[in-house]
Amino acid sequence: MPRKSFHEELHDLEEVVARMGKATRQAIENAVRVVVDCDVELADEVIALDDEIDRLNHEIEEQAMAIVARQAPVARDLRLCWSVLFIALHLERMADLSVNMAKGAKRFCPVEPVKELTEHLDEMGRETLVIVDACLKAFHEKDLALAAKLPEMDDPIDHMHRKIFEKIGQYKDHESMEWIGNVLLASRYLERVADHCVDIGYRIAYLVTGEIHDGSNPSY
Image 1: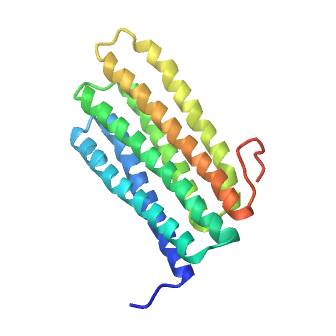
Image 2 (image 1 turned 90 degrees about the horizontal axis):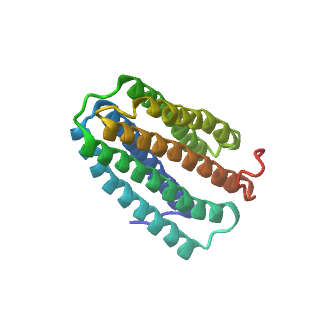
Image 3 (image 1 turned 90 degrees about the vertical axis):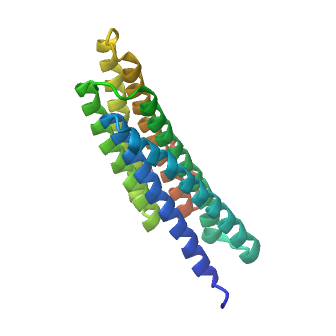
């Protein structure tokens, strides 16, 4: 079998990141459904999917390090190799947050969910998937303008988390208080997922421009 070219290897590396991103997105989407619907069987699927996401993370690490060792890339190609390691780490942590949501639901379901809270969490889940899709697209297309929009896309998710936190106080004497507390945790996990997307956006900006961005200057 002929040896792959340098750019074929880089393309393959990006394809693994795309697969990992798709699996992570699915884990987040399913985890929200687990909490909203108290779907214990789906929780097991989220937990099982995490093993595949971890495997992809290790594959990315091995491929990136092998490319650096064999090809000695420079400039943007080198930034790509280091950036995929950074992005994969964030995706892996996002998947871990999904597992936390699923395990929490398994612990406290089945209960009669509080509809008002599940509706808020469902909305927050949909908004979180929007920023996840955007950060994955920004990486795939190396879209600096889209990456720069991620911090402002994070703002409504922060607002939704605060709204759920405020609503929780209305149910302090509710018989399903443990489940309600788990909804608050799930909300916090979704807020952290969005933060990871913002961090990925900063790394995309570095990949494209070669300049470090940390959020202190919102203009890329």
